[in-house]
Length: 250
Ligand code: G
Ligand code: G
Ligand code: MN
Ligand code: NA
Image (cartoon, rainbow, N blue to C red; front, side, top):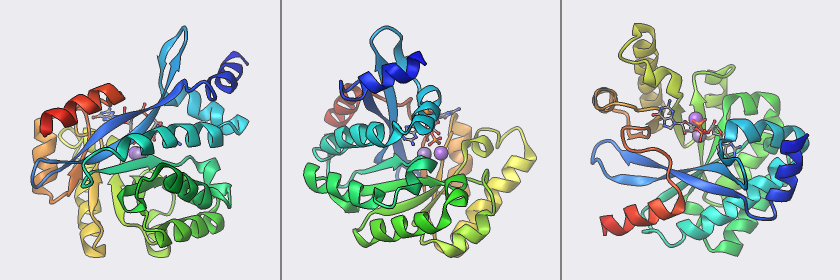
């Protein structure tokens, strides 16, 4: 198919680039770091979002090269940020089947000089469900190197609670479907409340995704949620916008 051919050609040409979404420390209001989100700068279609190309990349096996290409660019960029700032990257379910994934990421860290201690890898519950054994060993290897692991989209996957016990997560990210509807759905509010309390009992910090309004931001701060990201802080930015933002903060 045309998209697949375009992707095959576009990866080595550097058409897949990182965008960055701000992650804010809710207690201080300060920038804590960025989540990297891949975008395709297509020569004729413009910016193509990941929900179009990630599924194709997974089916065709292009995800490995694509992911390494955008991670390399992001590590090289993030190396020049203030050393207090972190970078989060998403790992697709099919990548968690690759027994060499941790070694590949560590190699990229060494080659780019970006410190493992500033990297967080986000893994969804559904990815774990598919390949728990390999996922466990990847997570173990990354943690040994000092990389932190976040459980992404929490609340939407399978058997979340047993994963929390079996795997050494450093953070839980509440899925944005609960957060965006916190003001309009009492069920969402109850779920967000329960996830925050559970994380607190487990001693795990929480990030809320999908914080779209000041009211949601306030609500999440009152619940004791640690970090937040979403449109109230800004849309995902390209590298130029990130540089401008960081220059302004200095
Ligand atoms: O940026 P946006 O909100 O459109 O992202 C849509 C989805 O694509 C999100 O679920 C996000 O986790 C995923 N995504 C974005 N960038 C990457 C990436 O580099 N690798 C993987 N595996 N998923 C990504
Ligand atoms: O799937 P994941 O949560 O990793 O990816 C985050 C996705 O959510 C990105 O595609 C990003 O563009 C999108 N996003 C970021 N902030 C908001 C928000 O406040 N509201 C909504 N609806 N989507 C958001
Ligand atoms: Mn994520
Ligand atoms: Na997410």
